[in-house]
Length: 362
Image 1 (cartoon, rainbow, N blue to C red):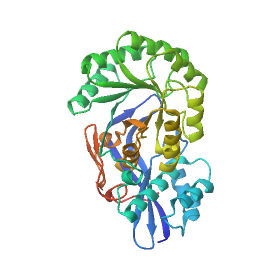
Image 2: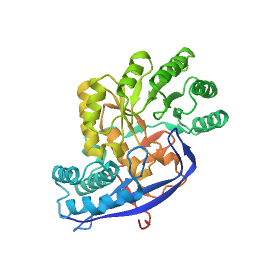
Image 3: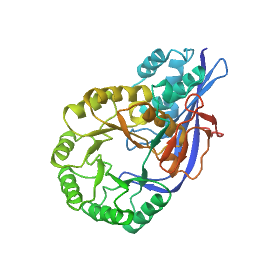
Image 4: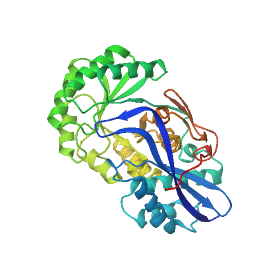
C-alpha cells in the first residue's frame, strides 16, 4: 500500500456561545481537514485548527504547509512504516506544529484502519472511558456563574474556568462559582498566561485561604517565563499545570528539570501530533510527572485523536477535551461518544470517524 495524495480542505463549525479567554474571543471553530489517501482506497483523516496566538499558524499557512512541504515529502510512502513517515514529516520543515499534527493523526487513523484496531488499543490502552472538564469562558461574573450551573446541570463534574484578565477580581469570580456549584464539583483555573509571577502567587494564595479547593492552575504566567512559573510553583500549594510553555519533549524536560510546574498539559497541536505527544508522555512517566491531555478549539475529529492518546497512557490523569461539547453541531459520523463529561472510546478502527462532512476550498 502506498500514499497517493494528501489533501487539505476547510471546515467551519459554529459554537454554542463565544469562547473567551485572556488571549482571544472565538465564535466559530475554523479547521483545516487533512485527508491521506492510498492506492488501495483506504483514507485517514486529521484536523488542525489555527491558533495564531499560540502556535503562530493560520488556516492559509496550515494548508500551504500541508500542500507545499508535507505532501511531497510523504508521497509514495508506505502507511505501515510509521517511523519512516514521521521522520520525513519532522524533517521536511520546522515548526508548523498544527499542520504536522493534522497529518500525524491522519496517518495514525490510516494505520488503525489497516490493522482494523481502535487507535487507543494500538497505543497500548485499555481504558474505554475517560472524563473531561468543560471550559467556562471569561465573562461577567453572573454569566460565568450561570454557565457553570448549566454545565453541572448537564452532567459535568469538572469545570475549567478561564481567568487572567482582571487580577485579584479573579478571586471573587472563583468564590462566586464555588458557592454556586458546591463543594463536590472540581474546579480548575486557566489564566492563559494572564498574570505576572507576583500576581499569580498573591491570587492563588487568596484562593487557597478562601478554601476554594482549586484542582489546578494552568499556565499562570507568560510561556517564556519559566523562572516566574517555578517561583509560583514553589510558593503555592495548588498544583501548577504548564501548557503554553511546553510544545516539545525538550520543553517538557526543561520544565521538569527546573521544577517549573507540577503537571504538563499535552496538546497535539503543540507537539506536532501523537508521535511527539508519546515522547512527552515517556519523559513525564520516567520523571513521575502526571499529564493532562488537552485541546485547542477543535471539533470532534482532532479531539477524538487526543482522546485515544488519553485513554492509552496511564501517566495521563486528567483530560481537557471539551471541544465537541462547545460546538453547536457535530459534523461527523462515528467516533467516540461524548456524553456531558464522559468520553466513551469506539470499537471502530483508527480514530473511529466513519462519515466526513463536505469541505470548503482553502
